[in-house]
Length: 162
Image (tube, rainbow, N blue to C red):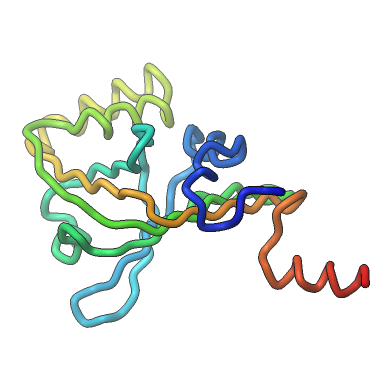
């Protein structure tokens, strides 16, 4: 029997592991001060227990994200059959001097050695401090559109087979 949606063990699923190491940006969903939803694309780093985002301390999202807030994050492929990792979790934030090591790791993964070094050298003088957003997963979902489908599609497939 496959691991049920919501189970943190899905973080070990091969689809989840590929997406957590991919160059695809995540989409972070959070609630703004007025209660309206926001979704932003953002680079991420997986440290084996948390998803870590690096951003300038004065980024708008940092005005809305506080320790203990609930957020959702998804990493989706862009070719069929689509692969999707969905995470819901709790936020913890801090600020570090210089570029956050998790941001550096993400940039090197996404841009490669030469491109990553060039980008980081551009960032260092304009970002003397960096905020980090740590997302501790509490619910995980994986779709691969081969063996795992959205629940409504799975129910429709079961009805069609009956």
